Length: 205
Image 1 (spheres, helix red, strand yellow):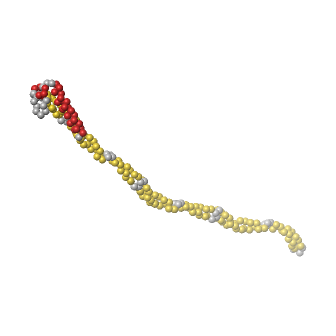
Image 2 (cartoon, rainbow, N blue to C red; image 1 turned 60 degrees about the vertical axis):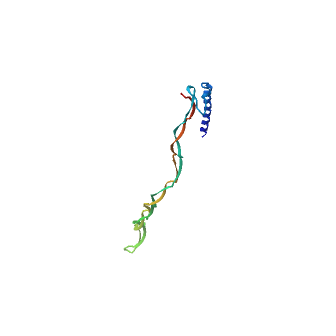
């Protein structure tokens, strides 16, 4: 609207100057300028020519929807795993082995060899004395001897295993941000290519 008002003002000024310009030329005097009735003739008269403004269309891009960011919470993920566990650990059981014995017989001295004085009478009734040798006397006795000492042996009982299922966290809770790009569209807009104008031109008649 402002542009049109300025154009009309400019046209009025142009018309004023244009109308004055032929009069100053002095070609046809007072008969060449008459607003109500045109009495101009010949090559000295002018006519007012109007040139309309020229408009065109341009394509322009505009934002239909701006860029947006969404936050999405992804919950933690869990899984069930089976693992081998010890139900009863390995054990060593002590087994006591008693000592082993046996009975042996051995010869032992009961009395040592000796001699004794013996008095006797001979065939004639006479008393006689002499030494008599007494040999040693031996006997046998039994005794128990240890063949193998007492010992401890260990029996190994292997461990007992089983399976246990438990729930484990595979991934923790996390927040994912998703960005949706902006959406654009194209529209046409009318623009002024050249403004309209008015000018005086020779009438040619």
